[in-house]
Image 1: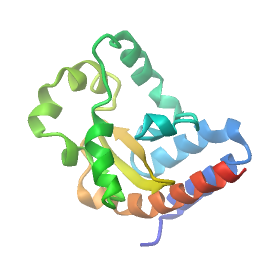
Image 2: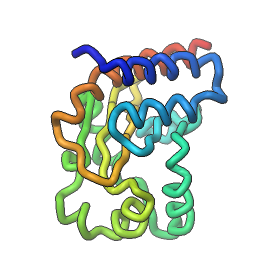
Image 3: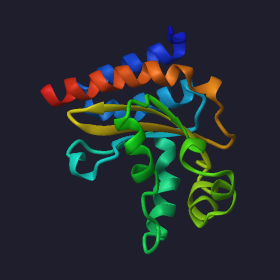
Length: 169
């Protein structure tokens, strides 16, 4: 599938960020917006592989604040559920692939962190690199549906190349 012009430009900014690391935040701001989101993260599901910093768009600041305020109980629930799917070849995941509607509606995580931060719903571009599962969840207030994620699959291919190039640089 061909990328829209706005997503293609945003992906190009991510390639540029390999050599201009200070531009990652603005590149991810642009990519998140182009994919219909309000914010995004870019990270490995595998903590052992997080030698490359977790990169985030600007709007993830409130998410991080709420996570920190609740770090006595908040744990990563996406990686244990999502990484096995990525290892089996999933290039894009919807939140509803990993969580039931009741979990999204009622869980403490969704009520106290995701919802108040404006990150209640997400879809991700996912891929494998050097044996590790990676993802770029894009967050927003309203749910993503399958049609929203068609470009995520192509974006995941670019992100995979970007990680390989970043490691080489």
